[in-house]
Length: 219
Ligand code: ADP
Image (cartoon, rainbow, N blue to C red):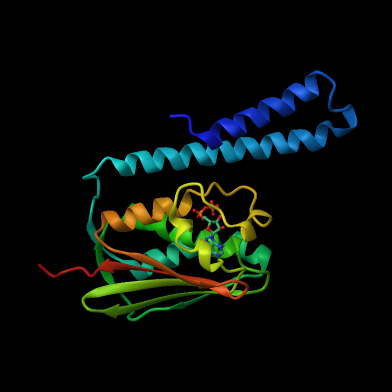
């Protein structure tokens, strides 16, 4: 399905290329505009990927649950960001309730949740800062928190960030490639597990995302 923002990006790509062809954009600016076209193409790819993921989540009964160690999953996912982090001077501070923590969930989908939340935490953090990831156990559940000290989310946006395509005004300048689908995907996955995700954030101070998962049972 073609959604509004996909069409918008297609039109802008087409517009730039036509302007190059018909001479509206002078030759000395080709380089600049072709870079824009490339980055718009990347954004279109991300958007299409995100829509495909959301569509596949819409069809129910798709979770493949197993027992796995969430601590290992967190460490592995954080490790995939090593390059981006060192470029931005960002470090992780991981605090686990125990050395191994088995949960009963869909591993691939929880990897995607952690990836999207950590990706946002990095994108919206300032240089040389720390991202805190913590787990704690309460009422037979594990709570996983990902906390940054970045730009934060204005109060009136905090409910809307889980909607498809929503982006806060604060973040627009910082992240031109975002599609506004990451948190919609996160929320769908957590809800499919019968669990919840919450955000606590203060503009200019930082954001914390907390979600729950069921602990593994020894049956
Ligand atoms: P995007 O691809 O734009 O990051 P998301 O659905 O993941 O899409 O996030 C939606 C919007 O929520 C972001 O564009 C940003 O405005 C806001 N947001 C998400 N995570 C954070 C964060 N950790 N700090 C500040 N703003 C955030």
